Image 1 (cartoon, rainbow, N blue to C red):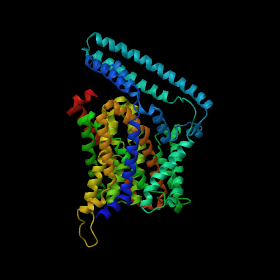
Image 2 (cartoon, one colour):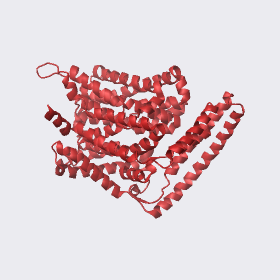
Image 3 (cartoon, rainbow, N blue to C red):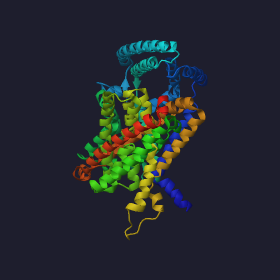
Image 4 (cartoon, rainbow, N blue to C red):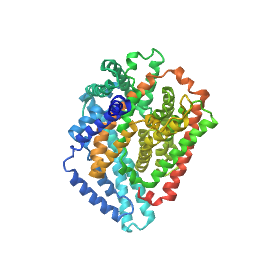
Length: 569
């Protein structure tokens, strides 16, 4: 029995995804928990004292409250030397406009020229932010003269503060675009390529594939991943939300359906290996402390709507559309209901869907994500929907976590906070959905050749084990965050372990997976899955149902059932 367990733990893809993910998370924790910025605790204590005083004297968050909060958020482990180095080492190619070389290299002279142009833009928006700040202080002072008892004056002050905050975010974004100096990222990309090749290749040796069979194909796939990131970073592509995932799949599809994918490349096209490891790292980004902050309204939006949409879409696909493949049906239903690609991968593993079925679900998810990321914020602003309701709606509907954050930021600070938190709550359901799909498929959907149903152990065999790593990573990061406190967690976990290390590595792993999907997919095989457009109709139905139900539940949760929580956001 011991030999069998050892074999499973060291020779299967899911377990190696867990071991690699844990290794990277623990390595990151060791590094960043020892990168405590000088004077951090004293700065937090000083800022929190002032913020507490401000919250007592005013029914809304004052200008002074936000200034102190900004001072806390400026303290980041990624600003420390080793933190900055690791962030640069693991980061994707930089953004560029007309010269693609700037994604990798910028001379000091070019940096000075670019800095002058960027600084002019920053000065303009920074001036506007200062003017709005003055207006906010003035209206706040007027409200204070009446002891904050005049609701109209309070509302005017609150609106002016929100206008200042929007301008402040814009000026902060403009400031980040000012290059401090030139850079040369070519070496960083080489180092991260070698590191990832070693890490993934090490696990594959135990799974029966040698380094020599893997290494050449891996560097080719990583080269295509770099190209995908390069296209994403172009200013027009960024404006329209056309991300690396879409380009990675497209590039892979073009190669596989023209010249064909060579066998030596296919050895390295380990789609699920890459993305499962990335999903274990994603678990560390789900911190329970943040989820608790938004409370029951967020739980209602994420945990009531999601299962209803999954089940409703699956029944519609099975009984109305009569989609030929139940596995395609459930994979697409999960993708549109939970969080797109991540849920599709976990669900496809639980029901043992075909590669082409997974590719189709992922492709449709990426297309709809790009469309909704652009259209939903525009619609919400056009109809005058509140930031909180709009953020909750987008957080429950838009599939990608990154797209949710981008769309939320377009609406405002509250929308960003609510949308990102709800998406985080929803991401927890990746493991829950995978478990129930494994149970349903093992006990209900499949029969053995002799006509008998599989036994209960089939659930364990079928259940995607990497989901265990996903859950444990979330618990580990959440426990450490709760021990060190919210402020230190923001500095050392959010802006250390995550943004400075694991989140960047997860991006590389996802990009490798998307390239591998494209390289492994044939248009002929993919076209067979469309079945007269039924999957497309299923996706349209599911997302329409999701849009309506999420908006309804978000309105009920935030404005009817728990309005007192909404007032505190």
